[in-house]
Length: 139
Image (cartoon, rainbow, N blue to C red; front, side):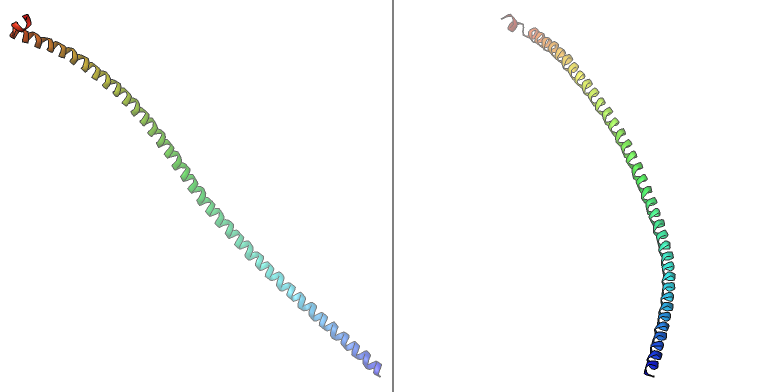
């Protein structure tokens, strides 16, 4: 009877272990299903987040591209203005050189004219002095 009891106990333990194994398999299956469900939800959330991030990146990139285009346009305008300024400056320098040469010519002409006139006036003054004082010249 001892053996029979032992066999029954072993059989009961085997059934209990078998039952526990089935429970564990069900629990594992349930956990696996929950995990897959959560994983799918997380994947969907991740894909949604990923799409939002990509959209935000595209938006920021678009804004950045617009700013870059504006800056490039401003740079072109500034270069054009700089070119115009340099052209105008060069024209003014040429005009200044031209006016300086005209000024120098006029000053030279005035000096020559006035020096000739001055010499003539000096000669006339000498003649008039000589006419007023004929004795000084004859001495």
